[in-house]
Amino acid sequence: MPNSAINPTGISYAQAHLVEDPTRWLFVSGQIPVDEKDAVPAGFEDQCRLVWRNIEAQLNAGGMTLHDLVKVTVFLSDRRYREANYKVRHEVLRGHSPALTIIIADIYDDAWLLEIEAIAAA
Image (cartoon, rainbow, N blue to C red; front, side, top):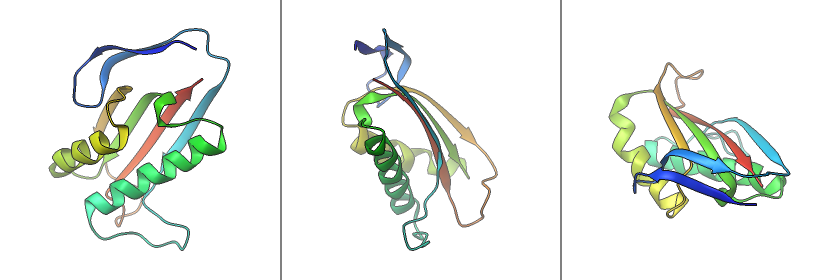
């Protein structure tokens, strides 16, 4: 299935993402920084990496990978996490550029510094 970034920014997202004739869509609910033991890491980068691992687990369960992501929405608890969020996202996506929206929001649990939802197509 053709899947391509339109006007990629070079910083791990694109202005748009074109998907032609997908046969499967996967909508990933907001993933939070909670591990299998209900633990929440203290620092932002550790929380961010955990959220991306949780997203990857959902993608894998649906027979997809990070490369199948076409839209990502990141909810940050504070704008001071923008740079760290970019750094981790760039490491995780390794050049893949889905469409992206970042929203500064009051997160459901005070311990969570971010939440990420995603859409994938294959």
